[in-house]
Length: 214
Length: 324
Image (tube, rainbow over all chains, first blue to last red):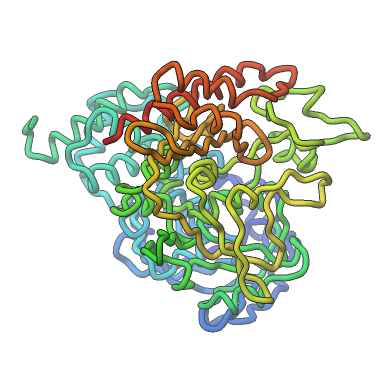
């Protein structure tokens, strides 16, 4: 999506404890954040990566993540979530940080073919896995269906909804009405556009089957 | 969340060696759906996190003797999709489906479902497991609509596990590995009501790991039913799981377990005796529901849960006998 997608530019760690982390804010304060955190003093005990006989890892480490089919290098701490690595350190900002507690689904990404919450997965745990974000969807019919059926109002939940919908249809090309509800059960829309979302998913399923109803 | 050291062992032995004597030394990371949220809220502040997802011996579902052996890191999605589980244990499938979020089902594990911490909002906001302030229960005096109707001593939270009632009804056991080898505990006694904030709600020490669940393949008819606010991600108001050993259409013996109404799954002995020797009709099922809630003591805001628990028992029983 963004041309920055393929650049390898890890940013300094902006996280500090309970720190506030909005991208716009961080854009002007990453240096202060990194110094303030005191985490830069930590040494990477095993920079070669975690594995083997209980090798431990602390402090910042460079890892490689497979994002939308591309290997991307990024520097993370053990506590960096996949979502924060994507958004704050790789400029892959389609997945949104809303509840940050594995409840709302705005951070949804597809990991090894299964829809997952980016906010409750550690970036280091995502090494070696295929991570698909909405940036890699191209002109997937789900996206157009959300537009056609007004499956959004403010739009903040939408990338997560689209990711969950695609994951559902990848797995079940012919979902029943109940299966659509179940498939979208991990995503919240506070504007309450569920009717449009449900129609959009059903329509996208039909579209993906070549316009056939049966 | 607080910075921590990350460990990625490949064997249970190494994992146990990486854990410590206290809960702040090290915690286990499996699906992470609860653990990482607890760490973000500073409810858990481990110095080390031990990832157990790459330990092969903790994965997979297979028959073992007369049991179905379910590895601790089997995800809820794998559990729901497993052929043996679907054939023998519809109560487990329905309980796992009740979790409601595909993301949690894809990430969350069987061991993690059992070990997840209570959802009590006082606990989640840092007031401790027993939610007391100056010796008084915040739950008694405060917002308690989702709390226990079967309190045990000072413990008024409800057990959050979705699978525990079904596993307890099926007579499953949990295998736990520690520094001195492994031990086995009935699912029903794995859950304990703590009498102090220093205790946990499960029988697990800081240096132990749940490795598997063994579910006896006894042929018992089983089902579970959750009374829920919504289909999507949430915990039920009340749940019931039943397992019935039948002789023709007569119940030879029954196990009835209530979920989300007490700090542990509540084994309803009264309901089980009420069912023995009977054929399940709607009346018999309703009677068992009545028996199951004998001894319930609702708090100021949750008397409604008594009726929901009764209904859950009745519907689980009707579901169990509906199956051929």
